[in-house]
Image (tube, rainbow, N blue to C red; front, side):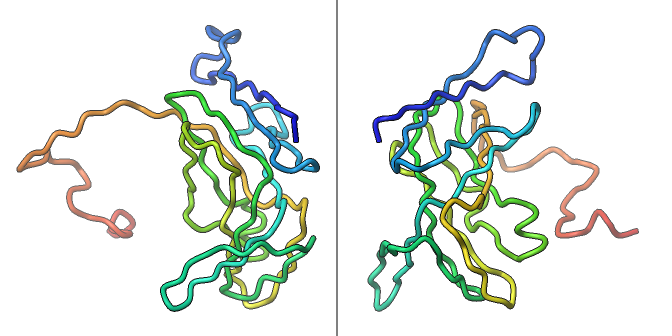
Length: 184
């Protein structure tokens, strides 16, 4: 558990001008057998992260806690959720954060997705990452240690100013929402 991996990310907005300018993201393994997420192909936005354990969620009579499950597999029942540690911690550069998002194939074909999506990992967080996995299908699904379960995407934080106002400028959309743009 002494390994430290450095992932370098190019600034894709100005790839030609800033090709030498990379953000360094430090990954520290929290488990020996973890595979640090890396983009599969040039230009990929996300990197696949893998299940490195299971934590049962206990929320009874006002008591909330996570219980480690000592197993290489976990049978996730329909509508059940489980915490899946990802086996690494990070030091993310100031001004950036990671999003933890579902893998589209698992969501589409098996109904397995990530809750609290996108999960947000702030630059100051130094503990092990964990994905909250839920089974939205009507069948049990066996999750396996080492299985790709989610993607992580580095994102930039933009400075912005909050201005309270009594009136907002008009827009073409106006007050319509929840599918209103698809109506004639």
